[in-house]
Length: 286
Image (cartoon, rainbow, N blue to C red):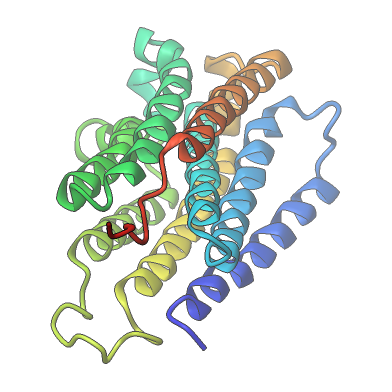
């Protein structure tokens, strides 16, 4: 039992839950012809990737100092892949009526791809600042994930707080609200390091902020998935009549660009770890 034990399980068990939902969706979907469902399948696939990557990172990060950094580089890449999957699903199913087929809608996913590249680079770079500049490291890492989330959520903010449109006023709204609340709570816990900062040593194994952060993130993803599935079902007729569904090349191109550039970032920063000179452990006295 270590401080990482529950970090592993709080994402490993949800991975199997999301994987089960993804496989079930594949089973009931005509993948070849039901192009309207492709964004949903991509989103559900990416929702499996990030908890698995996180669980693996927490499992194997203790192998060595460099292994720790590389594990979390991959974790950050998986989180950003999920961010792109969310953007694709939002673009396909959840955009408010007044924003569908606008310039913002047309470039929304393209910007989400760019955001994933920048976010992966910044979050990986932040690990090089952990020792010398821990506060700056934390700020950069939080911003690296906050900015893509804010971009992805712009249509949701518009829908919830401004003008949702007739087709977007449905049962999914409450799930979007719950998703937002859980995400904000997760961000607060990640940044504030509560409750362990109030009682050092008492939450080393169970109940520390990163475990609570994991739980909130999984709950947020569950709420988000329910909202997207409801929008997909309830708005299908209106969306098909109003907008053009994603083509296979558009979805595949966005995902491949994200993977290629994110992996390039990860490889670059991983190689940089081995270029850093190791500090001298013992100085020879003369």
